[in-house]
Image (cartoon, rainbow, N blue to C red; front, top):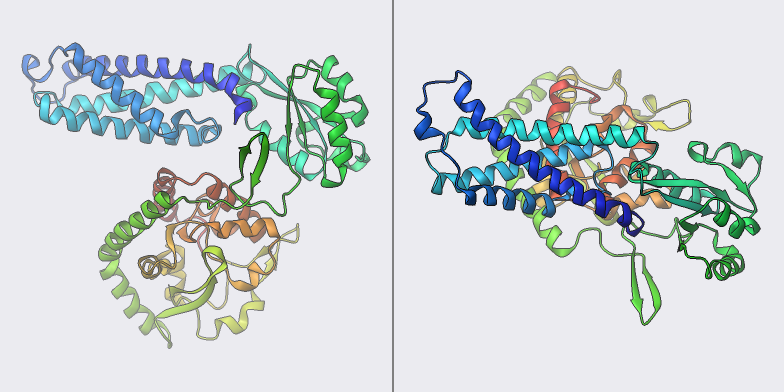
Length: 477
């Protein structure tokens, strides 16, 4: 996002230098702790050595390379504190393992316990630095104190409001929305503007507001039928030293990945690039086959026991097969351990309920159709284990938006169908952020977060957090 570059370049440079200094300080502190803490008998002259200067160079190189390759300094991926801390911790772990592997061949005399101390201190210092930095920036009212980027949004419709909500997430990087201008806004619209963002008046005040409020950027988020107004405003702004951006009002048509190409000065807007490029598709499929196969082998004895208990508990088949909507809207047969009575589908209307907003909640903790063994395997999510077979077959992925039933998909708005741009998964982003206790219409937005931010690292994070959610037995029924 180029509008963040002016702020983020200085911020990232500052973070890189500070991360390196804190990492070296953690390394020296780990040496001191290894010789002072009472953990076993050590010969200081053998286990703790004075590092050659080249060792420090290697540490700096590994940490800098891993942090730059990973999304540690990607402001779009780390604006949430929880994402920032998780990504940084994984990058530190990977860097430490690389250093330990290198040390095994060239510095075998180094203490393994010292590496443990180093990892703990490195995580503590770097995460503490990030939390402190966020607190300082927020106290300074909106971000990097000397690098405010003041933005005026023209258009207070759906697109403009959605844009304002997204930009608010970057406020601590110095993004400041000064207000909206719009000709068609009504009193209700003024009240519903996001985060108390002020409505400043009509579009004919654009130049006046830019000068009065010292605006750095103007973003036009006007509807398609306002073409003449858009052209007129752009002409008025050409003589001012500000950035002008246009958000196309194509929300119902646009897909997840939108790219802009320049053809001899003519911008080409691509609405349908694949979410996963060919390399990412190979990596994700390979990860699914390897990890899915390993988990299936480990889980086989448990699956055999569950099959036997289901047969004893109630009549009927062991597996429940149901049509679900997969990647690109393709139907497939999803497998689960049967946790309900045989005629459960015919009694679906007994359990469909709505929350106060009218959103569908199609799962219930008190579903009368669930068998005794079904209550146990649903609460522990063990009923999902047969879907490992779907993963091996290629119908599903380990991680992705949860495949929905066709009748639910028919209720989707066009923008909600973007979730089918990636393989559907056994677990996903919305499952670890509330799981089944969220209504159907809400979890789609969290699925789209996963689609927009896909990476193998994110898959690993989701799998790890899923394990924690299952252990806590939260939200699965």
